[in-house]
Image (cartoon, rainbow, N blue to C red):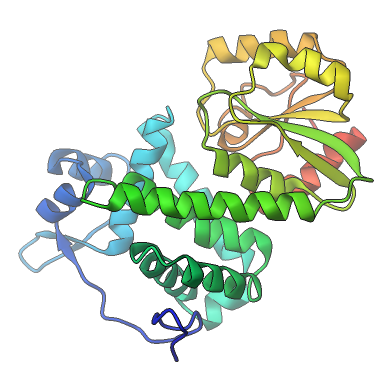
Amino acid sequence: MTDVTGVPHLFSASLKQEELFPIREVSRLTGVNPVTLRAWERRYGLIVPTRTDSGHRLYSQADIEAVRSILAWIDRGVAVSKVGKILARSEAAKTFAAPRIMDSVSGEWDDCQACFRRAVTHFDEPGLALLYGQVFSTYPLAVVFQQILIPLWQELQVRQHGYGQASEWLFFDSFLRGRVLSRLQLGQSAQGQRVMLVAIPGHCHELELLVAGLLLSSQEVFISVLALGQPLLELPLVCEKVAPRALLLYSNHAPDQELQRDLFRLSQGLDCPVALVGEAAELAAESLAGSPFGCLGNDARLMQRRLQQFLDGHLDT
């Protein structure tokens, strides 16, 4: 079955024979040299390619996406030795999020991404809008963003070596930002407790911040997302005027000691509790144990519940 975009319907169960790539081709596609790829396999177990009878490595498309994910985390300041835990946690979240779907329709999320990828490649905004509506009629909000749309967005972000690929990512990024912002503005109850969400400058893209706001919002909590580039030094002034119930700081980078000191100084000038959101909350959880900061993490299944616990004073900090 096909829709008006000419792409397979989201629920197509057709399976394609998996294509495998030699190490030189993976190196060309990702920019990672073969020596590094072998080291990631032997030293850290980050990638486990199949082997031919003669011992040559062959990589699947999933392996290539794993390489791109590793690069993305390294660019965010995460040590390669810690990337494995992050990837394992993401895979565990995927399996937990919808076990019946994972058991009954293998690869369905990949099929969804393939449909979106084709629409993006053709710069087909009407087709993209149609797919966007279809996927939300099928999956929960958290699954749509954390398992389908954001992974594809990240893939397109790091794969910008060929002609037109930067334009594809910008097209997809603009489309998603518009849809998420609209959903965030229309779907919240102004009667809930007001919580401010702000990005640590240079630590995320606008889409990541908006999606976090959407995943954190509920009938009980109104998430006010401040503009990207909001100076941290001026947050005490903003909080004094707005009087939020809490301030959430969003980051996907590993916080260094200097940033942690800056955040501690910031918290001392605020009259509301402060919590970290995003991968920074996962990466800094141990170093911030016992501090006044809450860590809400980056798992859509848990963030909303942890936020409510934080507001109620029941979340361990």
